[in-house]
Length: 322
Image 1: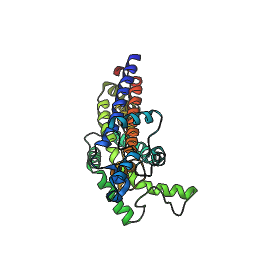
Image 2: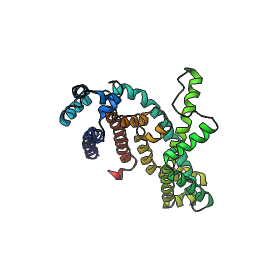
Image 3: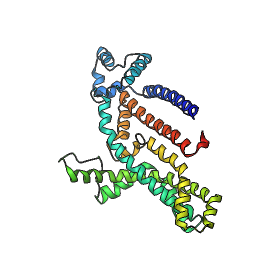
Image 4: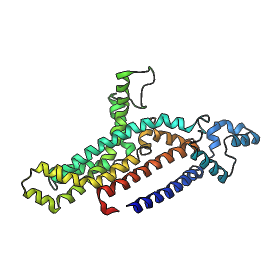
């Protein structure tokens, strides 16, 4: 068991080092000059001396090796750098404002989509081949095939712009400021449409995995044995079937948790929701290297953390994986 965990720790350390290096290089491989996005159209009016001074001020005149060394040094010290597109504002401060909104959406998404997927996956597996199974399969496969931006745009057009039931964009109403229960209701109304979109996109994976896993479990000999003992169908399905079928579903849930930070770029962009996904889009658009690097790093560390949790839990659930 100890060798298993030591091997996993070494593997993840190598992965983290590789990701940090790739995270540094990817933004710099993007086409376009970040200085143009920092200074705007005025860059064409500047002299070559002024441009070089601006490059030096923003650290864009140094070699990649020098920039990489500075990046690693700051990263080890907990410094995520300063935003090039937001007046050298610390990236950590920007992320501290955006991250809670993404965590709010994605945590609710994971809980709701997991519950719905497990519930309907169990029903479909128990009624395999019957009408309800066919209907549920068609519904969830249809959900899985729909583009994320298309779902978001339809919801905005119908329920926000059409009926006016929900706000079109944002995470809250800034003016006038709201407090107490009014603030809670306002935040909830802003979150309904993006959350609904995320649930529609996420629930199909959990449903399909749960259905196939449940079908396999229901074909095991021990299920036949408990049926022969005269146990009620509900007890067989819930206690003996669903509990044993949840192991593969745990993988999907953990991966969804890992992708919480960066898994909603398109959705947050469609709804102009001020989360990490929207921040990544803005950083890419503005060639804001430090902000993009920090977003990618946090997203990657979340995925690695989810894998680490899975590696810790699986040997406890099934010792055969060691």
